[in-house]
Image (cartoon, rainbow, N blue to C red; front, top):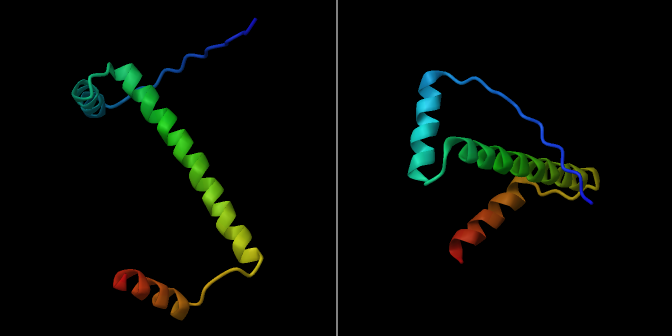
Length: 82
């Protein structure tokens, strides 16, 4: 048997922000509560991904894996030539 515990959270929004949320949710054929849940889930997932990428980059710097400004410029130029 699986036990699921749900916690409710109440947030208070300025009327203008509430109106925007209502409008955008309706444009996406969602009710506002469902739309906000999706936004929060997306934000939390993106934040976790972003933090992982930053850690990965810092780990590379710690290992000395980096490019000079000149090397980076050459790579960018190569990208635009291709």
